[in-house]
Length: 109
Image (cartoon, rainbow, N blue to C red; front, side, top):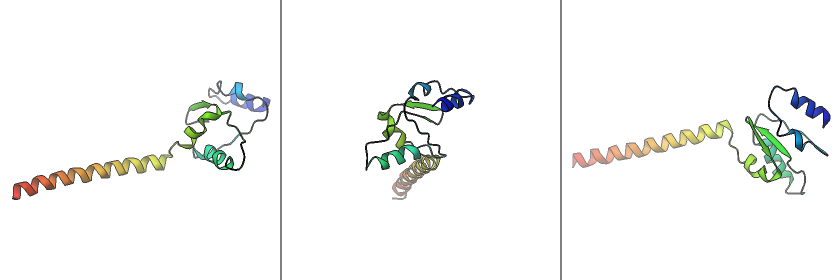
């Protein structure tokens, strides 16, 4: 924990909220996918009650407490967010096209 605290303090980022939770046994998980560590912990917990989430630093946000595990596992990846936007735009375009077709059909009748 001492080395981890020093690394966090010298990282150039504000990890001050995480420092107090570094007591007892601690493990660190790193990932390019924001929700991957939380999802792994959730999957592991199907067999055991441990490990507990002490804290996390995800996307410039500090999260403290095991009760935040579900929130972290639910964070969408960049690709998922892009897909949501594309689907929303596609849905809107289909609705507009349908409305225009209705207007054209009424004018033709």
